[in-house]
Image 1 (cartoon, one colour):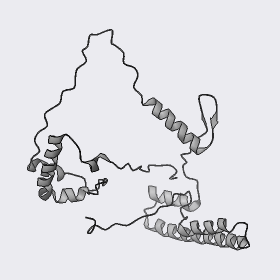
Image 2 (image 1 turned 30 degrees about the vertical axis):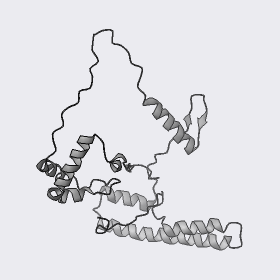
Image 3 (image 1 turned 45 degrees about the vertical axis):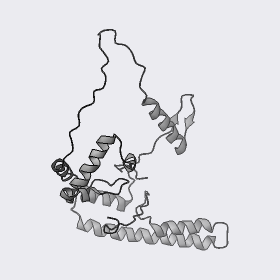
Length: 219
């Protein structure tokens, strides 16, 4: 899979200005680096020219995209607002107040306070005996797991979603689905070993968590 499946690295810049790209970031870095030197004025002028050029290119591209979109569609209005420079919806967090009355204004302090508050809520309360009914605490009963078979594994893997994310094992669901009949036997062997030993493979004990952007400010 590593040899046959192509991969590429995509770099995204989260910003309120959609025309900010690598050239803009580089120009701003050169301007900041030249601060206090003889090249400061020249770097500032070059940075302004780069920002103006990229903004004009963005306006031209956006106008071309508007021509190809259906007038009045949601995407058309979204592009129009970007072209007119209207402010987007922000998801900024207002100042927070701690239990001792201290106001938190910095983003780092807000994140720490929110994390502390949320983690404090995910705690089970103390166990209390029910005085109104006599209930026996039932013990967990382990259910019998059916023996995995080749037809059953092939049927399940053939129904996987190809767009599902790949985990640390780098095994795409697309491969499992398209070669369900071929991979059924080794998967059955692996499942039987897991059931017999009662242990997961070390590679499957690690997972990836990817935050998904929904709405509001992308940064």
